[in-house]
Length: 418
Image 1 (cartoon, rainbow, N blue to C red):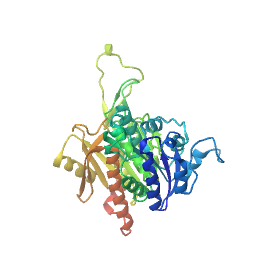
Image 2: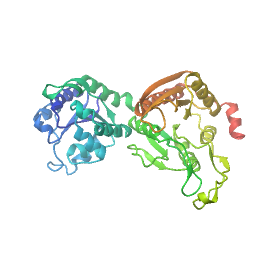
Image 3: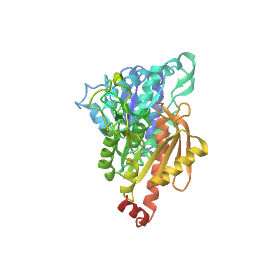
Image 4: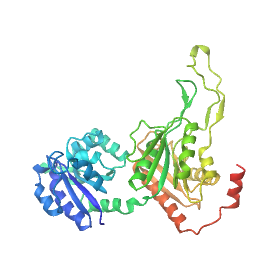
C-alpha cells in the first residue's frame, strides 16, 4: 500500500485490539503514526505502539518539539483511522470540539477519515450516537460498523469492534481504489430551488439537498476537486468542497454555467423548479386582498443548456425524481437520458416509503445510454452516492479508452440551432 496513516486510539476496552491493527496496517505497507487519547493510555501503554510503529506516540497538544502537532499530523496523513472510536470521541468529532490531540488532528486534516465504533449495545443504539454517525457520514467520513459478539463485563450484543481484517481491508480500499477521482474536477448541484412569489412566500419542492451533499462529500473523499452549487447551504458543508450558495433556478443556472465548463464531471442532483411566477410582488400579499392570480413561466432548463454546451470529454449526470416504479421508472429514465443527451440518469420513485426527499435513505436506478442499468436498493444516501460515482468512473474510463472522435453532426447542429 505504501501510504501514510494516522491511527487514533480512544479510551475503550477495545483499545488493546488497536495494537494488532497497527501491525497489520504496517504489514500492508503503510507508515503508521499513532495518536492516543488520555483515556486510551489507561488500557494500553504508548510504548507498545511506539515500538511497533517506529514513531513516537502523539499524546498531547502541549508537550513535544512541534508547537502545532495536530496540524502537522493532519497534513502528513493520507488517511486517519480511529479504532476504537468511543461514543465520546464520535460526539466531539461531530460537534467540532477539539479538547485533545486526536480530536484536534481530526479537525485539522483534509485526509480521508475512517471511524470504527466500539461500545456497549445500549450506547451503540442510542439516538444521539446514531445521529452523530449520520452527520459524520454526510460529511464524507467512512464508518466501519461494529459487529455482534462478546462485550466488556461478559455481555453479548452489537457494538463489538469490527474484525481487524475488515478494518484493514476498508483502509486499503480507501487508499487505493477509493481515490479513483483524483485529478478530476466535479460539479454537483443540490437541493430544491425556491421561486419567490413575494418576500415571504415561494414555489418550491421537498428536496432537502442530502443526496447532492452526500455526492459532493463522496467525490471529495475519492480525490476529486469538488464545487457544490446548493440551495441547502445551511446543511453541513462537505469537507473540502467549494460551496456556492444559491436559491432560485436563475441563480443556479448562472453558477452552473460559470463552473461547468472547467469541470470533468457535472452531476445535476438538484431538484430545479420547472416554473416560477412571471411577476414577483415587492411586498407581502395580504389575504384580505383575495387570492392572487399567479401567472407562471418556465425556469431555465439548466440540464439541457449544459448538455448543449458540454465538451466531448465531459461526463454529464442527470437525476429524475419520479412517482413511478418498475418498468415505468426505467422508461422515464431512458426518455430523459435520450432527450437530454446524458451519460447517466439516476432515477428514483419519491413516492416510495423512506426514499428520496427529506430522508437519509434512497433507492435508485442508474441507467446508461445503451440501456444497461444498475439498481441500488434502499440504502444510506452515502452508499447511493458511492454507487453513482462508481458509474461515473466507468464513464470516465470509457472516455479515456475510446479513440478521439469528431463530435456528431447532429449535436453540432443542435448547438448552432438551439
